[in-house]
Each structure stands twice: as structure tokens, then as C-alpha cells.
Image (tube, rainbow, N blue to C red):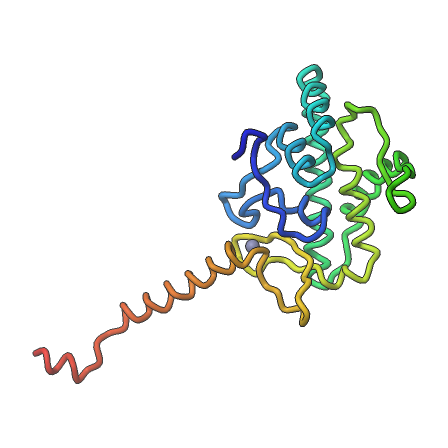
Amino acid sequence: MTPEGYLFERTGGDLALDFANTVDGRPTPRARELLADFGDLVSWGAQSGILGEGEARRLRAAARKDPGGAEKAVRNARALREAIFRIFSLAAAGRRPTPASLETLNDSLSGLGRLRLAPARDGCAWVFRGAAADFGRVVWPVSRAAAELLTSDALGRVRECAAPECAWLFLDGSKNGTRRWCDMTVCGNRAKARRHYEKTRRRRFRPDPPHRRRQGM
Ligand SMILES: [Zn+2]
């Protein structure tokens, strides 16, 4: 936690995958929703560079005035996140997306109608133009990123973390395409610790060799 809210880990290497990773311990009974309320969604948007400081502040103020609208927006964001997770989790297994997930993503692409060109240092940049307090503005760039990843060669580098309790998605940027963990310092180390534990446990429970038992008698 920070004064600005939960500090999100962004190890996905892609905006859409980072968004899919806003559930902790997804395959376990202790799964934890990291987008518990609209404030979390704004924090994630700010930490991901989607929202500037002023935009985040205006959105929080708008949510205080319209809690129902904000709640609906975070529900929609979670539904989109689940669709994105399913699509890329299947892609990581070499499988095609389900029509239902694709439809959810397609519906969210309506935000692309807000795309405008704005002058930038070297030419122009795509920016999303919307009302300052539009509750959907955090997810527009996410759905665009998901669509772009889904139609790019990088799709073949999407992986799901090998830790059975994790299921976070990431873009494998390793030279030989063998990265296994979302974060070596978290899941990689946990797996190492588990292997060590299993090894020492096997050692501890191994019965004494017969000759030593005889000696002890
Ligand atoms: Zn992991």
C-alpha cells in the first residue's frame, strides 16, 4: 500500500497483460481481487501511465459524486479483465479465443472512437479524448492494447507463469523464449524454495538404511 493506494506489480510487459494480472493467486481458494473498487482502478490507471495526476484526481472526485456510476465502471472493467485473461491464457497454451471472450473485448473497443491524433515532439501521437470524468477512460487503452497484441507476432510470446498458484501472464522477451515465471524474485524464488523443501522433506522421512539400524540395536 502507498498513500495513492495499492502498489501494483507490472511484470506483464504489456498493458493488456498487466491488466489481466490484477487478481492475485487466481487459481487458488485465496484469490484476491486487486480491483476491489473504482479507486483501485484509478490507481492502476495512474501507475500504468494511462492517467495523469490531474486526470486521476478528477476521476476520484467524479466517483465521489456518482458512486453508482463508478461501481458500474469497475464491474465492467473486471468483466473485460476476465475476458482478456481467458483470451491470453488460451493463447499461451496455443489455443484460440472463445467467441464469448472475444465479444466482450470487441464491445469494449467502442472506446477506440475516442482516439484522436495530437501533435507530439516528433510528429503525432494517438491520444484518447473524452470527458475528464468519463469512468470508462482507464479501460479504453487497455482494450486497444489487447487488440494490438492479439493481432501481432508477439502473441506467440505470451506465457502464463509456471507457478501453479499464480497464473499471471507475461510477454516473454528472453532470447530463447524460455522465461517461466512472471517474476523470478517472487514465483521463481517460491518455486526454488518449494523444491528445496520437498528435497529436505524427502531426506528427513527417508528410513534409516538397514545396516545403520542394526548398528543401533
Ligand atoms: Zn507468477
